[in-house]
Length: 139
Image 1 (tube, one colour):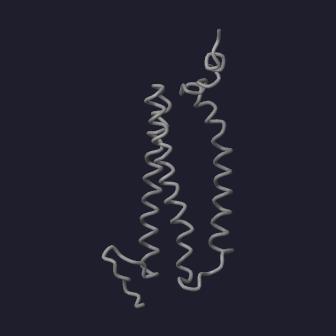
Image 2: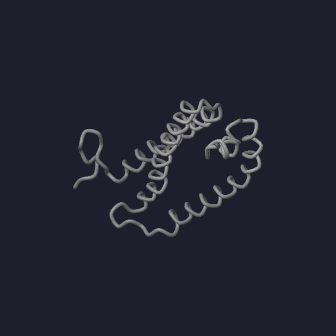
Image 3: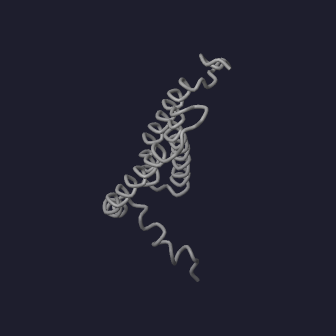
């Protein structure tokens, strides 16, 4: 009597080995890279040229089109890292640990961009500082 996992086990864990995953990933990198570049260019164009100017913050609000996605991507990268670490612990697969380790610099870079653009946006808009004041802008 075979269980569903034993009949499809070879299919599910086929790419769990770096030796079988890397050739596939190598063939897909140009396609995913091109799609990422096209979508990033389209998003930046819409954010910087199509979106209307904010009446209160002026042109400085356009920084949030970089800040918010960077913050989301940092949080998402760390969530995916936690997922791959859990898979690595549960199934003891090397590729899962390697994926988590490879995501760490990407998550840190997005977190840095998010923090930097948040500070860069907060200064001209007079956003609240850590002390609870409104900065240099009078109310």
